[in-house]
Length: 348
Figure (cartoon, rainbow, N blue to C red):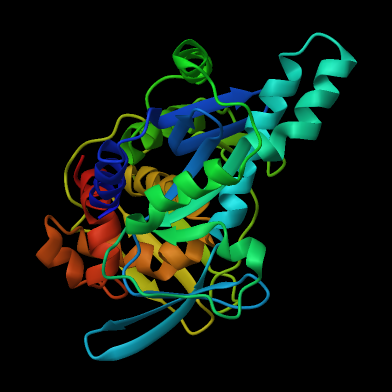
């Protein structure tokens, strides 16, 4: 769905009949800050930072700037809040501003960047799904000016440039401005699985079994903090792992854990007995993946899947999406979003 949405935006930009440079999937970094930007569109006047959202359902924005998604799933009407893509894209702008200011050699030029930044750079959140209905009649004007549908994108860019008093760049300057971003790009955008493997290597390199909760990791090109997260029912789940095999935890095999027995008692204590220490390794992998996705989607980890659902995965060890759907808590939407990655992790 995400790639299809970005293709819709690419189509609009390609057929804009405007002189512009379009940079796709740009990763910018400075110190401990990073930004993974869907599109940077450099025009003769302004530069537009575009966040693409290809959401299922309709979007409502209230007077406080909160985003609410409504959709019908299997006859059920679902309403849920989502993380503000405006806030997400503002962080991208903050990284760009920081980079531009740090590139200047004296305080005067730094002040000029600060003063004219908002005039030169504009944030746009584009809802790329053509079936999405956007209701923002109660939203503030500054919010309305930052959220639009894909078919409104080019008209917005043209109007924004027409309203600007900035001097239009010639062809040489236009290319130079675009190349300045290209030169700042830090590698290709990693897939979830690739980034997950990098995180796993970092995790396994730690001497301690538990990670320092004040440490930071780079997840999906964004700096994050690792924190304790309660389960959705606000209870603590204790996992006791009894092993009869003392082999090194990294000496895993691909065999399924069908001999594992999971007993859940009334006090929510989970006893996990197995003859293979790979279950402990699999728990680490699933938790790392859950953390990565939660940070990428700006959601609580237990929204991705809970500890109970994770144990269901380990007990069932699904080989395909049909079997995955039989695990409690994994419906069509979760399977569509995370199914391929989860099956890869479980069966690798």
